[in-house]
Image (cartoon, rainbow, N blue to C red):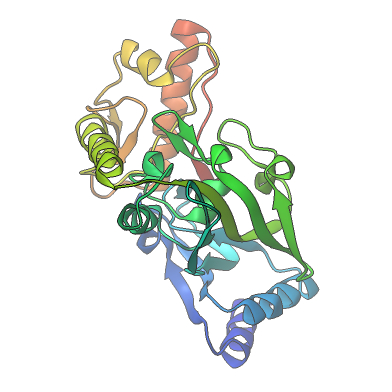
Length: 307
């Protein structure tokens, strides 16, 4: 099925969704890098999601799911088939007792926005995620974490949909959380909503204090002034990857417009007009140098999409 046919079907059948053809993925990633998606759909209607999944399966169309685009690098030739951006932004809070609450958050809910809402409600346990520039769906999928907290610690269950349109709910154990990993990275299901188990506090001052501390740390230790995809490399089992990169003298090293951050060696930043090729060449160079000096194979934390 060609691009025009896919686009025409989507326009005719998906009335609630935002549909674009040949959409630059640089507009939808925090790296500000990436070629065009053949078809880009922002979807927030469950029935339309079921319809498009059926269409994709029947016609064997390539499907890519994104959230906030904050942990991905899209290659320069873009993404074939359909890119779905999940825009489910529902938030519901259910009080269990005087100490615990359940928070239901749609896959498209921004972590920063949710953190602010929970602060107003004096709900704690989510502070670690307040500065992560992603969405609930992406954070659960990769078991995002910071400052000693991870999503595996707070996710009670997750509602998802399979390629046949069946709605499934997985409990915490079934999500198989590990370091920057969950079952969603290998299982063909799409996250719709997660139920978080959090704490009810008497006042919000301590929550605000913690969030502000984390924000100040992030500002001083991470290159938030330049486009990037978060931490580029995973932490090693017995080493800190950024430290090894720094000890190779690579802070500030660049290829094209892609650079190892001067602030934090674990981040690759876009100095302005970096291509995905620049970033990938820089990553390979860094991997090679770290292996030569320390005999360690460092691994990517970001996901590389497209062609």
